Length: 391
Image 1 (cartoon, rainbow, N blue to C red):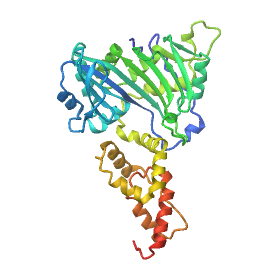
Image 2 (image 1 turned 135 degrees about the vertical axis):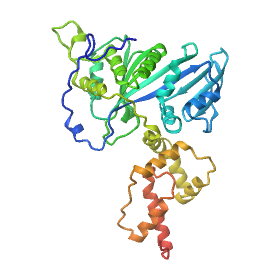
Image 3 (image 1 turned 120 degrees about the vertical axis):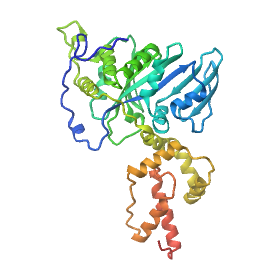
């Protein structure tokens, strides 16, 4: 895999993108665009389960038996981090961290990609094999117009070194892929906000570069040598493999065509950001909320309708299952910085309001916003029956 640097012959010229849309210019309190590692997988023949746990900094968490993938006969699992072992083909131990697994590593593990990748690349490929690394660039600044990019993909207004591309549109938003899954390099661009079912106008478009085998190792080696600068590698892949362009009938060399304005903005912004961010599990708040409301919401609503909200709350408190540190971390982050919307029901006087809010704070899962109305209605009934209550 060849990385072509911006501003070099054959590379993308450093162009200044056009002005951002007015809607995006007026966005406030948004996240900044950033890089993150969104998948890491490697196999090692020189490590044990104990040394791997120590390398990750996850030796004191509660690992559970996981479902192994052939040819492995055993696996350990902890919150999207999986360790496969006992290979029938003597392939050593396989460590796999999905995107959510990377967030767990950042929060509960060592959170040291430089140290980890240095160790992996310091050893010979026949001793430690890097199977896959995904680098994601999250656009929170309105750089990419996903609708236009999707249409331009359909109209083939791009140049690419990939023979294969595909585009999808559906309930989880629009996405395009260049390169085949499982190949050494693949680029995927998709609407992350739609995938997470965030409908508040948040702009979140992810450009993801998936690197496998020798390309993954080459990235890791360059990342270590450069002192952790990721932009050169990311830009090198984009420059060499993909570009969205404005057709020019007077030039037969499509690679010389001018870039689309949104692609200029992407490359300029991606080139200016050097380092990864390590978002940790607070990145998962929307994911947790989406799971509770979209997937478990009907079951929760049925339980409340059958047993009543207060009995349901008591059942949750007495559930007996061990607390998951991932969710505890999200709760702690929310207490630090995420404001809880308070009810302003005018039918309740100040004392009633204070009493209800005190009780509400004890109910687990304040993210279940659709249940707040029921909470207040049921507590109001209690107050009506027990007027002597004085907070």
